[in-house]
Length: 340
Ligand SMILES: [Zn+2]
View (cartoon, rainbow, N blue to C red):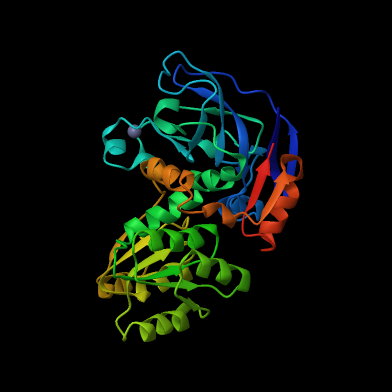
């Protein structure tokens, strides 16, 4: 099969890789209908995470089940399925509490590489959610978004305790931040402030339900959020970047007693104790347990109540993956969809 391999920073190749096979009786093999490039794929692409050897890439996927291991009963060949970036059994105590991304048996899909024609899905019964029927093709981008960016943005909103009547600030205008806006709208927030200085992203944020746009960052961004909230700060802040600046901006934009949901993969973030202590905010976040939300999100997308697939502003054949990475790296694209 063909699959994307990162050889070194900036060196993305589509090459022949061995077809995956059933390795464990709990595995499934899917034919990937669509995959995509994640903001987190850009960390090794930019050399911020080391690339010590050629690495298969991709952890977002929707596809059709080809084959299942002998212990897989609820997932069947021919089904259209969606899973998230951590394979999880969905039965251990951590999974049952709704934290499938920290499953005691979890397997990181990024080590398998779903930017490919085929993919092995470990713990298939726990990981995959099947749609009632094979969805029409125009729903593919939305369902693919549920695999990571929508599920992650949604968790950010839940972790930030977004509720009807609340004011929500979203730090970060990548796909996760934009879909956190959509999630906050669905969860009933009254006012949603998107922090972005890029016009096409501002436009999409407004279409997803943002009521205000703030272009300032850092301390200026915090000051503007305070001005918009009678000097108090937002009830809920969703952090979707993962840098020192964005994390401090999120904590300081929240009012005392407020909630910060942090879902940007942290790189080099060190929080000063005095800032934490004096903030009096709730902090919750980490790798999003997307599996918890998949059934609900799949239903909302299938009913066309939400259209998260609009974050894909570039769709390419898998063979042009290198251009897909480049476009995201240069911020010409918000998110690239890849079709094998
Ligand atoms: Zn588990």
